[in-house]
Image (cartoon, rainbow, N blue to C red; front, side, top):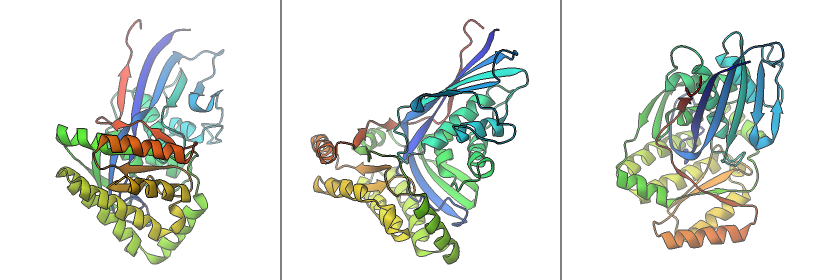
Length: 349
């Protein structure tokens, strides 16, 4: 049995998704701003010649301690990790090849930073690399969206997949769900450095969980229509965020973040959980300019804070947050200038 190919891929996560909720079918049109970050999701794919003594697919989900061989991909009978299995079903795999797939990330599980979409895009990119030609970032993002909506039958916006595929700082224009264009912001090095220094990501100690609240919001928004006041308010924060960051206006960016969180609260009060509210309150005591409940909101997950630029104040803020609740974590982040990265190891093959 010979190892024929070794492919490594990775895709970034994202924060500060101002305009989130407008990238959905019930919003119909939307504008979404986000900042792609590291930690990334990593995939290592080993492709072997298929033999009778080797399973066609082996998956190692390191963050969960799972190693298993899915058997229901062709029939869409999902096993331990439906997202990964459905990605294989969506992209496909060459005939007469057995795959050994390892996937992991330093991003906290369930932090509402688009980790699932990043995992899907990273795996889709690695699988795509097995075949002639390459899917564009747009097509990979769309494929990852189909995994969640068509293969798994879940509710899904479009922006997490775009963040993972493109990286960088983006303004997404969704003219008609799910069709969108991506406007990437070319920041000066000085603004990039200052943005990175000001940002803080706080994981609230437990995975995001609020499907019941989300379903209630979706039902209400479906009844009200795409121009509902909360949805339209969220659209406005995306454009403002992009414009302010382009100018290096961090006060304006912070205001857009605050307005977006207020828009989430308008959708449903429970989208801002008590733990997130406490982090926001502590942040204000230390002069933060902005705060954003990452993702759709709800119980658990994470909060992004935009600090005032004083590094000692940021250190003191982090200390206060960690002292408030021992389960909370400050997640080290850097800006992810690149989206999906694919590398094939040619040595020895």
